[in-house]
Image (cartoon, rainbow, N blue to C red; front, side, top):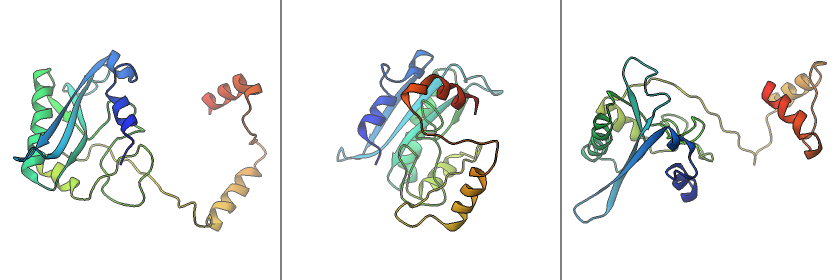
Length: 187
């Protein structure tokens, strides 16, 4: 489960700079007993809304029980809000922020979740596809279990790179912050 403060930060205009050029809305779906069974958020990023042929908004932070009707109600809420804001298409699941956090739908490789990386039950793919979502962008991620010895091939690659004459490796220090920041930006 993501940390509450990380999720709250996405929806806090004081923390998330995307609110300076966009907006977001959130919904919670409850059953007849008022028990939460799903949630979703919708976003508009005015800097990217017209990057395609149609004005595109996004949805994300989707959580839902394994129930197509419930999932479609959530997708409909996001879609309706986006439509009211002039959007003609909906991308998702995405984040109202950078693509390196809470972005995408995990469809393969359900290993230990990584910090701020989307992690969901396998049935989510079925729920998104049944609503009509299609793969637009495929993102790959990898997991290395550091409690096990690092594979020998990693050591061979590291040694090969370390021995290249055009590369140098050094530890970061505050004394060289300006040069280190310049070098990092250049790389």
